[in-house]
Amino acid sequence: MPAPSAQTDRFVHERMPPAQQLPQFRYDLPELQIPDQANVVSYLFAAAHANGWSNNLMLRSPGQTYTYAEAEAQVNRMAEMLIKDFKLEPGNRVLLRGGNSIGMAMAWLAGVKAGLIVVPTMPLLRAPELDKIIDKAQPALAICEADLLKDMVLAAQDAKHSLPVLCFGDDSRPDGMEQRAARRNPEYAGCATSADDPALLAFTSGTTGVPKAVITTHRDILAACNGWPRHILKATPEDIVTGSPPLAFTFGTGGLLIYPMFAGASVYYPDVRFGPETMVRKMRDNGITICYTAPTFYRQMAPYAKALGIPSLRVCVSAGEALPDATRQLWKEATGIEMLDGIGGTEMWHIYISAAGDEVRPGSIGKAVPGYQAKVVDDEGNEVPRGTVGRLAVIGPTGCRYLEDERQTQYVHNGWNHPGDAFTQDEDGYFFYQARDDDMIVTAGYNVGGPEVEDCLLTHPAVAECGVVGKPDEVRGMIIKAFVVLKAGHPNNEAMAETLQDYVKKTIAPYKYPREIEFVTALPRTETGKLQRFKLRQSA
Image (cartoon, rainbow, N blue to C red):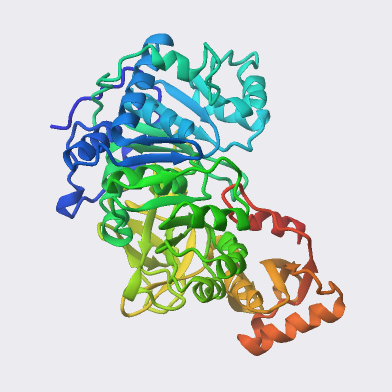
């Protein structure tokens, strides 16, 4: 019998999708068998102690470090403080607002260890956006970084909410998280949650413009640790990890907190916002061995990496959006490192298709991660012949559970998760990304993936960034339109547009060339670096 839930606040449990809308969860490998009573934070700290990592560094930032033992003691103090100072009960939601810092990491770990459900939010969100998240998640407390209090307080003091706000990142505040926690027990046991209790409400990053709340359990996270991190990433206790994905995004939570803990590695959080040159220098100066960021950022870092060198770097993980082969080759030329690509998503917690080392195949993201199965299907869910474009379907130890959202039935069909991506699969099981379902451009009867045209344009020496979408057209149904950011020194005139059009015609099938090119100074992106093609489609 599964362990009974320890969460007395049943708000999230009662808003789970009905049974018939849930995905199937498969735990086919021995390492995916998680105890029915498990708290992900307690589990990872216990594993660190058992593996002899207690004195290893876990968290690093300029001027501050924590070993695993020190971090556990501080997390325990904070967890007890949340329960006792604010009279919270397991299952209450706690909204988190902060950048990538030791304080934000500690707040995440403390909330989950206390049996609460953390609701991380992107630091660039403003009061109206926070207000919508508060309405949906109904948190009992907001924990906010000192530098980001303004919008948090505005949202929290809304007449509908009156939400208490706890500040972190300012040791001088007697009512702040640090001083409150100092009075609490460093050996606090936390909450003995069921593995199936929710640990996290993750709001999607909004590439479609309408975010959703995804329910992630303790079992989900622990099972995922034994998938991609164990079989593909293979981090070690000697690794030092950094990257740009926000901790509020599951790509960042996994890569820059949970997965390093699983391996006994350490994470470096900088004291400044990463720019391309700054990130390269920080990695070089701090002995970084594993980096996580989006393809666009790797492209921007490449000239600095080539000029400055990052001798300690050994693994570069790309996710969050499609990795153009031009970017992969540019980074390999700059560093000698074959990028580790992957596709995942908030709904599935993290990466489920990937490949590394000798398994990398040009143009492919990789194969299904051990523990997952994936296939390419038609609109009825039938698997299509290898080499045929269709919709990706995935099943494994994690799956989509939206919080009280009718879009659940759009994502889950017959137990399989449908992330909304168009793929092909070859005879060897490798998956090749084509586009998001809604990014496929049907022009004069041809199916064209916007990312393929983007990849081609990015190989032209004048192009810094680009985004390609379909524009409605009476004759062709759609035409291909490209929004292009040029590198400095190149004119944005008609001659340049014709040059780029001719280049695409000569490089890939001529029918894939962009019939319209609009030069822009920047492309719309989410805070996690994803290109917001829906905004480009609106412009087109």
